[in-house]
Image (cartoon, one colour):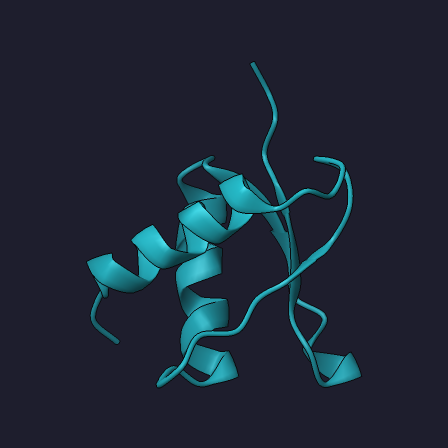
Length: 70
């Protein structure tokens, strides 16, 4: 799967705009992108240390927490 820079930007902006506590879960969705594509991009952001992600696919949804490490 190829990196979609616009989707990465959309995910990071959604995390930044969230009014929830940084330790809470954020439900992500994106028009035109399936859950697998979003999960893949969140996994890449997690590996890069830009957020902390957890795949909850066994629960039929994906939730993610931002990385607030200094």
